[in-house]
Image (cartoon, rainbow, N blue to C red; front, side, top):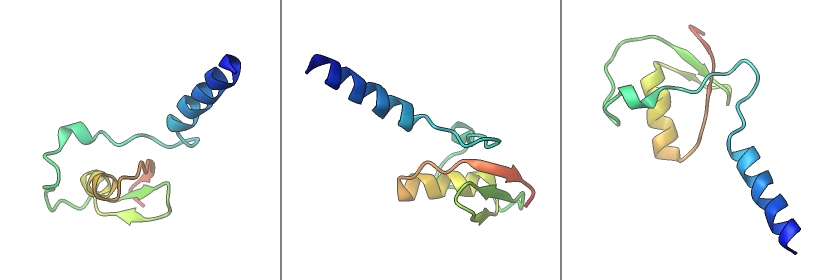
Length: 75
């Protein structure tokens, strides 16, 4: 039983920190969320959606309680 609990905990931790290949985690700590400037520096999210800026991706993650990463910049 103890082994099962430990294995389930390890699986939960491993899946919670998964970053898709080539993707980067947005640095949301540099923004005063939910306020973003209107600068247009587009990023593509790992969900296939184009965001006007990294800040807007951070706002989406905060509001939707998701963890979308940046697949590439300038899409």
